[in-house]
Length: 143
Image (cartoon, rainbow, N blue to C red; front, side, top):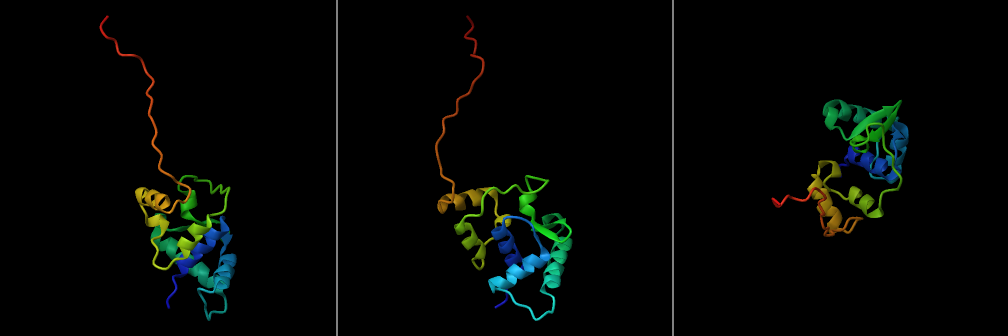
């Protein structure tokens, strides 16, 4: 069974909730048991995969370097250019989905698809009708 190393790295970072050194990423990926290598230095292999991905994908890369050896998910920086401010750990259901084989990576979903998925699985989002009140000057009736 072929394992997508980059997908495993993404799961490790999501579980960590913060950037990690590529050596720590390698340790955690190996500990998960979904990937193995005969190489003498798994950290160098992980670093090489990440370097190639970042170089080949450019701005579209799922990962970015945020310090000496530190790797982060690019999505954490989409709305916060100075880095993630994660206050809570990911929900267990989101971790299960991230680990599911053949799952669509969240980074490839449109906003509408993501919201529909969250609503469908009752993951912290619910549909609620709202009244919209508009405040402004009253129209002149000509009097």
